[in-house]
Length: 441
Image (cartoon, rainbow, N blue to C red; front, side, top):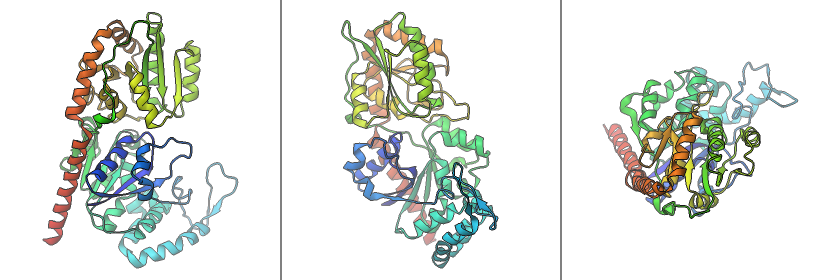
């Protein structure tokens, strides 16, 4: 099959679940092409897989002027001007429309109905008013149109590119991953996906928890399918965790430095535990807007020699540090703006390595961490609860190998990436067959 995958930014170091899906489909012999709204940050680490699979050659970037793309600022009324935040000069809307005019004409010649739709605010809302939907259509109109299926990752991206399924007349799949079923509807209204849910053939989610939320937002239950993330156990060296006498016990978190990762609470829990267990070190891999606040917290708690914020690191470094670690922490929370996790892949990777994990009763995490078996779950933001669980683990290192083995076995048995990707491909095949039958009838 030829598959068009739509994403916001590619590659994104924190979105290994998308990368694993793309490479898995390529391994199965499918022809995958990626359409990204944004280019990667120039200083961001690059997964080796991107180079190994030549994914740069498979990626098309939808380059949209920032006032229309990133900022989504309206180009109407025609005789007014557009001010981009942080800039000194405005842009006349007449100039914006003049620049877009050739694209409008070319699109009208080849796809008149879709073009009229993407320019109609009643159909495409602010994407029509800002002309961003027009620029997306223009880019796709110039692309090959012999795809079998379209798959968009994250609800807002799916909403932006629902025009692709209509343009190419193929089945349309959208995957929801976390913030798009929590923060996004909270900020944009619970009807934000009404047009998307009408257009989509299948909506995939990463947990039963997310399935309930998507249905509550208005997606027909028969369109919703739970498709867990997966890990390739062969990519992660499994070993029982049992520190030698006198070793420093290494705690590890891998995740973006944002509120929903709950790092403030794990750092405070480490501070509580340290008085009884001085020989611990907490490594945090990831970058994000909360770094200055977290660095200040580490200093205020007197943990500068105990906690290291490493910043974002390439996949090889992450795996090396997982191999050296003894316990994995990720006690996620619902952020103040409503942002929630999906099912963090880092928790799955940690279990595949044989690491005991401590996490939280949040979102779909209980579906990937078996409380009391492969790890322990705490109430969100409960510093004392996290500290108690951590202290209990540190007091009983002899339990670590059994916990790690159960986690590894569960990842191999229930969350094997190869099996998950085969399930996805079978879902595509069913959609394509159904689509063909519908058009032959």
